[in-house]
Image 1 (tube, one colour):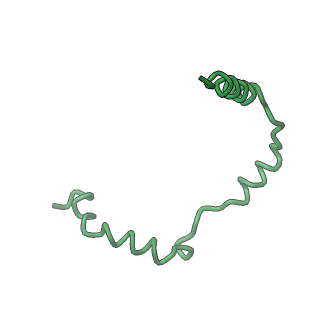
Image 2 (cartoon, rainbow, N blue to C red; image 1 turned 30 degrees about the vertical axis):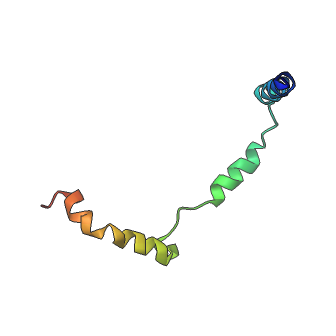
Length: 66
């Protein structure tokens, strides 16, 4: 028993999420996207280099140089 109240609340929340449309600050979004830059090689961490070396043995197979 007791499922009716929980289901009603879930339905209410789902309806609120479906029809809720917040104001979007497009200028802030544009600033955020412009400020992000792709990572440079110098910014690579040692963990990234280790991960690259981990699959280094398979590189010749992937390139087709059998």
